[in-house]
Image 1 (cartoon, rainbow over the protein chains, first blue to last red):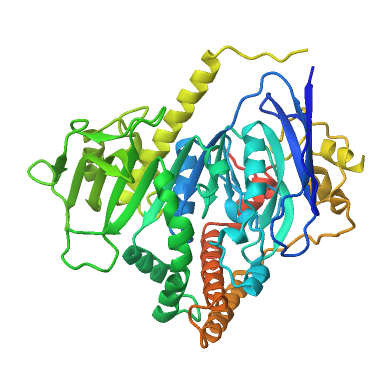
Image 2 (image 1 turned 135 degrees about the vertical axis):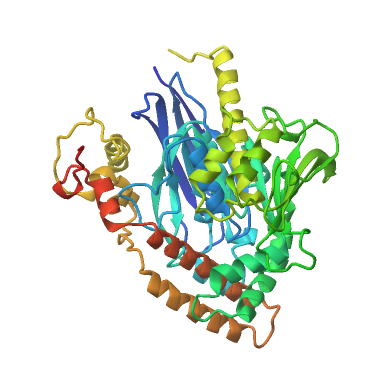
Length: 410
Length: 128
């Protein structure tokens, strides 16, 4: 029934052993699980240990689709995740009965894991070594790769938990292969091996002005914080951010760029935003959204005789461009929606948004009107990217079902 | 072998309140459904305490403390690894504090309780 393979790789000081056993879930398809044992001295660097892997594959496996979401800390990854899982239906919640400080979210179709869980240095370790969490040396990419690959292959893993409150690594939690796995964090596209596992990738690119405004909003009420401390924290982290996080955007299939508005001269409040959705051309199962006429360059102010908008209005732009030598389509929205008819009017003029019915984008935006960005381009484009990912998922599933099944039944 | 036994326990998991999962052990052991909490699982003699979620207040204190430490760490050399790592810690704790506030905001204690215990009296809902 089951086919087993055993791999053993080279020995070294650390030993890691993986064991896969077949299990059956309520979803009805066969799954396997793997346990990674790693002996590591406290805050030792990630040396590759010897690993022996036993895999048992049974027939009827359905592969997990892996999505990568990269952004700096405090740049709206959680909000994006809530919008994305909502598009797939069902709320995403932390694993029941597990560690209350788990960073994982699970819904019927989707599991979201936070890549901070792959920190190889805990808070004290980073302090002692004088490195930030942004530094690749503070992260275990070998384990990240092995576990994401295992999940993609339908194998459950015991993933570590990085506790953001205590700054320590907690005992691991079991992650079963979902239909869609989202890996979100600082480095989903940093390591080439992990990058190659991604079926789709997104980078949230928040301009410095907006980042500063958002962090003021987030932290000013916190005791001990001041404008100076917020500024100092952003500035101190910037060299590592520029060296290790920012370069990942060249690999992303889609980038959401958040900039200050151009509708209000010299605005630096960061309340009104100009948001760009940069979509790579030629990505399999992903066809970029367009406005009016695919491939043309368009500037559009929806507010006028047919639609009246409140100050400072709304402005759209669309057109082809290049981004890190890639051909891309860029859709831009400046301004914000203050009324429902503004939103539905805009939605009805966009094409290729992968909705299942008229007004689905508007419905999703209204459903989460309390989320940050629900009245501007961040919410609109996050929702659209969610719909595009649903479309990509459905196309991938259809392709797999059409392909002849490689039966390994003995 | 103990490990393998541990693995098998994990098969019927909290996922479904499914009727087909064998309810043979009504024991109140958290390890039955959450075997990863089982200390023996890790086999190397380490015993883990189940971590408790810190109250948001204590995160606020940590944020405040980390800012003071960062300011001190940067007095000598603002470009030193020590200084940069200290401000990174401030960012991490500030983000954690913000998440804790969000979680507190949208968690109603009764809703949370009823999600896990829908069959209890206080969680009954009536039609008409």
